[in-house]
Amino acid sequence: MNSLLAINSNALIDQIIDTCYEKMIDDHRVNRFFNARPLTDQTAPLKNYVKALISKSKLNEDETLELLNAYFSASFARNNSKPSLVTGSDFGFLLDIVGGQEIRPITLLCKSHSFLMKLLPDDDHYDVFIEHLTDTLTQLNVAADLKSQLLTLAEAGRDGFLGRGRTYMKAA
Image 1 (cartoon, rainbow, N blue to C red):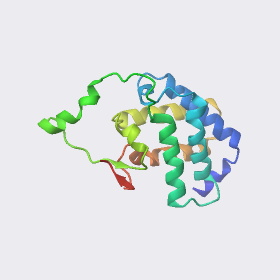
Image 2: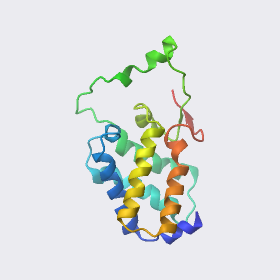
Image 3: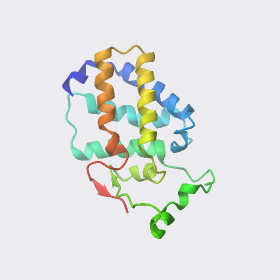
């Protein structure tokens, strides 16, 4: 992780996140996960988290949870102003009841992580993120070694993001 300190440019971090996020929002495979807030409102907490993650200062658990909570809330929480459409996944819990699907234990990274987990992301969705991040890093001509480090860091977050990570709180 110390070698990531080479990415000391806040402008580069901002540009990577903005470009990748725009690609995600424009992609029909994953854009349903995001809320309708302005892009700048959604990306600001992620930028704060990433900058804190790769900085020299060590975050304690409470600081990490606070940053993650702000990110998941800003990007995935729905506001009550737009009507909710019933989708097939809204009734996915019925398959658990009748035995049509294996119950998957979910571990939340923070309280607001539940906003995303209700939408049932899976590895295919995370692969789309890795695809867009790879394209973004190539588009921005990020050096190969830094690109590799950032992709490794992103891949390390897969299990936690998908609710399979370290247990901070159990999903209700």
